[in-house]
Length: 375
Image (cartoon, rainbow, N blue to C red; front, side, top):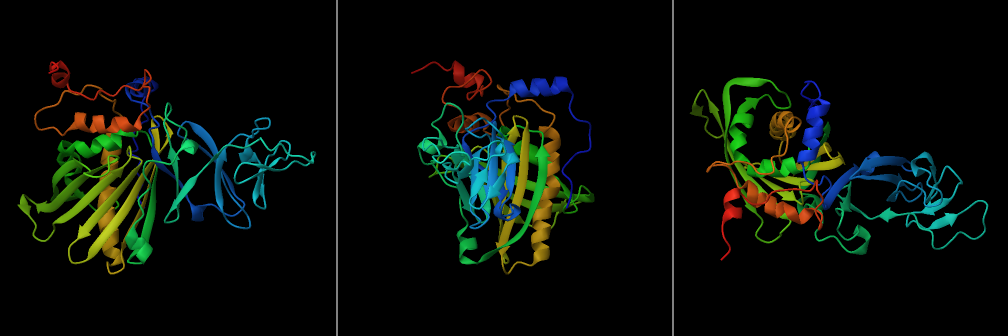
């Protein structure tokens, strides 16, 4: 598998400071993938720092059930990640208090009456095809435990029915970007040709001389679900200026939430479909953990799946190099043929805090729109 790192020097501290202050709130409301169940052994505890919080993800020894808790013991604040799993409980390393998966105190070695009112903070998880997702609410919103999420992580009925089978996973590791960039990427169709127009050997950065990818892309909001947007990309290969017949392919990319979950559907006429999840987890304001997982029709040859997914993977580093070195322009100066950036930003506001902070500034209307007098 290829590396997604550009190999260039890390941005200077001055640039990083300017970048950090230019972006909106970094932890928008939405579903975030934390891990795959299979990656967590029974009895394992994993410390997680993400979304501006600290968690422990742990798995019971007997049942294999997985739980997510606040990392710090409510007793005297020890880090539970330094403890251990005993049966169906996690044990604090400080005083050996044991907590059940629901956060209740199950055992205290020096007390016969564990306090019933003491609870470790717990967070519900959603298991989608073996991946664990957390629903996070941004600051200023109602806490996740006080109400159901407004939407769920989409399951693939083709996977549940057995039509689709898992065909691979890949991790891009940590990418130095803000999560809003992946959302803005969808409406900025003007960058597709200059950044993604060169055809490369799948899974590599090796360009094939004379061969180009011609993109025709369109962005839209979902007609039914307000938290979903899409872009459709139709591509065809061109060699030395001439289009190559029977190289057409189509993909629809659906964004569920603020860019934390993308679902790609590649339609291979005559072969079937490939579906890929791409997930973004904010580790810090300008750092994302990026992961991929894909499924395909059983009838599609593995080599063809490798080729299609590899084409996307060979294009992703071009975006990374831009994202890791840019600032957020709150009031972009657009031309007539640019994409609907302001419309997308208005849509994106639903995932940000109800009470914006000084750092949570996303301009949602163009200068022309703001200067129009009210009727």
